[in-house]
Amino acid sequence: MRALAFVCTLNFSPAPSSSHLIADQVMAEFESLGVSGEVVRVADHDIRPGVGLDMGDGDAWPALRQRVGKRGQRPQGELRPVPGPQRPGLLRAAPPLSVQPAATVR
Image (cartoon, rainbow, N blue to C red):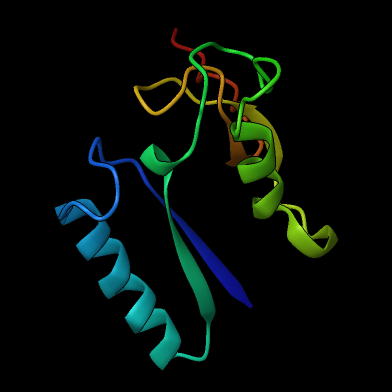
């Protein structure tokens, strides 16, 4: 099993980052459990603003996103948009929604 941590600090490498420190600590714990992994500092890549999965020539996001599904592994569950500051329109694995019928009130 492999783990991949995206660190979304605003600081470019090699500037200190508390987010990167936390990710390194998590990866060290994973390694103690036999899980290999890596930390990717997103600020070090040319990720273009926008809501698409590929914002054109030079956008580094498609290559980073491919690393999530490396070796043909796909996240469980369906992929759907996740709102938030990390990147509008970003897709992540999420379990399917289950809708339960409402109780009838009489």
